[in-house]
Length: 106
Length: 125
Image (cartoon, rainbow over all chains, first blue to last red; front, side, top):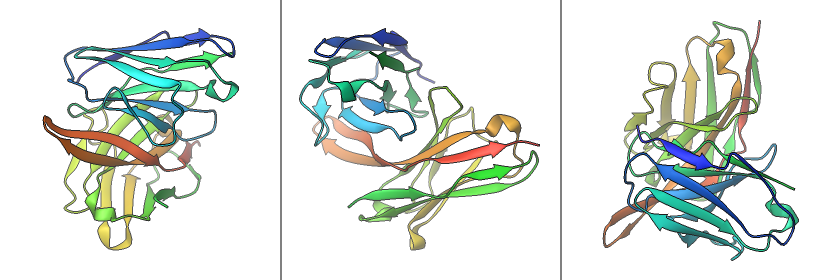
């Protein structure tokens, strides 16, 4: 199975900051990667798919980049509602695999 | 509105069986695969497997194969996750999600949206 290594595991930031979260695949996954946000007690929510495509309704301060094995989620101008846990998910082949998650804290 | 609604929380004893459900509405249920993910207390998401409700083609994460059974009934727009003999280590929240597939020049692309609200399964003697 493809392993997804996500870093950092936790991150402290302030409102207005710019943050980046990384995900590295153990082998090439083309651009078959999405990013999901999960708030406490809630289901995950799709933010970005196919590395850089923004899901409808997601603020433009979220962006994704990368290809092959290295991918990045960037959040510009952090807002209070962005403090959550973020996961990458590769859907290149079965079994799909999540990164370990990054908890973004104030 | 496209949505997935999961069955309610369950409290079971070790060794008992369980089947939880995920009902889709607002779209053609048979046209989209449904995936399942596990989240153990305080931990991250783990992808368990996925099923095509149209023909019941199922793919399991090897870590979960033999431990759970994924099924679907297209006629009632519902997917299922079941256990024949629960263990305390099955205590977790289980989420279903619809896989959306679209096609570009280089092939197919996927994403999971929406997600069900989650079903908390507690296994304790």
